[in-house]
Image (cartoon, rainbow, N blue to C red; front, side):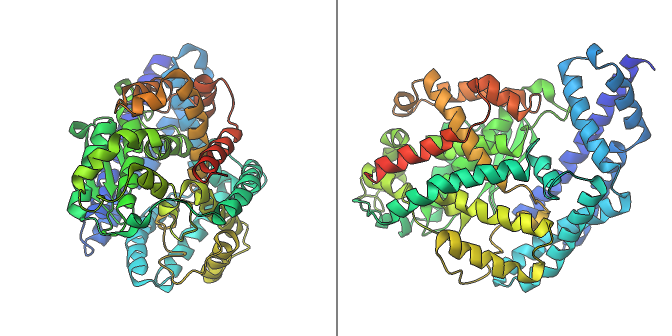
Length: 500
């Protein structure tokens, strides 16, 4: 068959898939930022239809013909078509094994599940969510069996979010983290910070928090002409297109730092999406390559930049203009110590950098147990609470602070949580070489983020999904992924802060 003709057909199919993705994402955005509860049913059905249409295209005879022809002539196509082929072939092989009616039913179930999760969380009642979560898990297990797997049944789900990731790799990674973090955490919990950190739970007017977060994201590089910011129960970023990237932030009057760092975090995701080369539009490559790489960018802005002393040496006076009375007695040294204070806590998204990965280990071990059949939905809260006690030495008081705190399972995002920790580790490795290339601290102390943004765009952002995570890491740092950079970053930072 004519290669040129099949390439054009392949591009056309992808353009249609991109359009369905945009439509479904817009409905999800509406559901998360103000859609009516009574409208849940029709929106869920619409998402199911869009998902089904996309599924039909991904598994169509036309797609198979395109993949067969292009696959036999890969040496004759450019790098964009090659990468599109690799990603579509993987998706085609996976989807061909899943019955279409089950794929549609699952999509509708996902859409309903989020609303039920929100209601259960608000009521602090896991029993309201248990049954639909059980359905989602059963679908996940069925789909994994349809697809087939090597090693652990959790492996295909891990690979969905981080190409090549397996239980074997993550077991070794998390064991290495525990080996270094747990002893350091014990040292720190026996030490008092010699700073005034009581401001952390003071009252900060929400309207002023919103104004500050809008300014912060803009200063960091978020383009408001190509994006939008709203509120939601759980902060998230939705990249429809490089010129239409949407994010949400949530606000608590007595936890101002939550909004500040969720804004920096989601802003990092959004800046990544906005910096992708526009030439990838409608190719399927116009988004971040993996959850881990995406998370590395949000963690770079949230932690590497906005939790650094250099950043606040410049930016703290700006924050004080929004809260002159609330911060009148708080020095920049107090503020820096407060935002980096190590403290065992229930909520993952509010956790400090050091304990954060312990939260991820809890979820990783539970998801692994779910997929292997070692735990059921009936005893999930019990297992959750046991692990929180084991790793964080806390007694979980209710389901809202425990098993219901994250939205991910309502979407069926099993295998996603580990990328939060992997992303932090990626960020540390990228940052090590970023700091060799630019005057990082000096730039931040002048309020200059251009050099940092340009380095990230040059080495990571612009490529979208063109390159694999491993390729990006090797080309940006000269080395494969190595968790030593993350361990060294945490150790150096917190030993210095706590004078250990």
